[in-house]
Length: 446
Image (cartoon, helix red, strand yellow):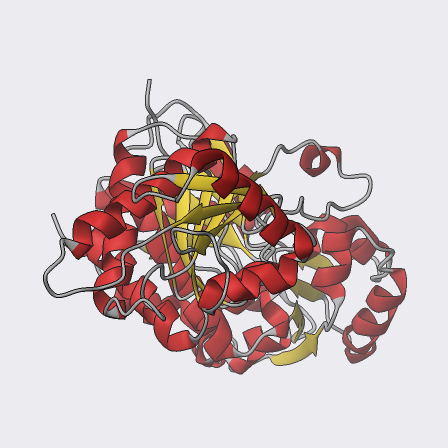
């Protein structure tokens, strides 16, 4: 049975797993994707604008993956982006996190509440509004815990950090401590050990889970699925895991390649398509695509950059290919090693030299399909593609990027391949935004 997640839980790392567990207790048969944004996190150490932009990129990606409700299981991201997301994506219900100031205010006897969170959480208007509505008559001791979430993520010893951050709250006489970051409950035992007897520690995860189920019911999101959980991480390398936490260390993470700085990403079947700015020769992917000429003479543009970065092997293997097979015809792909580059292979395709009297679109589509077919033939899971023919070959870049993206996306939607990630790489931000626009049109057009 073909199933897809209906709910997604987003955090910059593993912190939101406590929220996921709480949702799972209330909705055991829900199909849920957990998204750990390891390529960008921790959110609490980014600016509010950066977190807002990044969270929207991931939320829009999840929309293309079939997700119907998004839980922002991160106080920093909620503070930075929750209001914006609700305005930008009004058709998608969002559930956010907020420090549990309201229940803390009703529990305190000393009139002093301690709130542990990231600096980003305290900078957002959400926290100030929360205090104004529910805790104006109590003393709030706010403690920005720089580096704590990252240390928990890495499984480092956090004893010294906890000693430093808890001391001001204890000195002020706080009898309730609010955990304002979803990472902090992972070390709750260590936190409680450093607090005086009788101090109440509040984890908001159960309340957020209840709110999630209520919102799902109101929005008509079906919680009676297969009970599947998808564990997605935004990057190629396995994420760090906290030492001693067997529930998390046993997770089999699936990379969804949404690199830092990516302005748009979509999911087609099981493949992530993203727009990225950068040097394609430095991409840590299985294969990069070269915008070659038919003789595989790498004299300019992307081809020259690849030949220089890869070293002598690129030219040597290219000449050997031409001697064996002849010129590189449209619709075919040549394969060489990547030489000194971090990728394993270079897939060479000869896109068209743009002419007003030629069927440029068909020729460029054939080159794009040849690249995908070769990637599948070598069982590549990750591939990076430049704006073939849009540079020195004269193809109008707006049109070229559209043809490349649409051709590859259509193929992936119809054919099972080994590819799990296709990066469309712009050499500058302008070209990347052209690729991003083409990805947008995939979603907007019927």
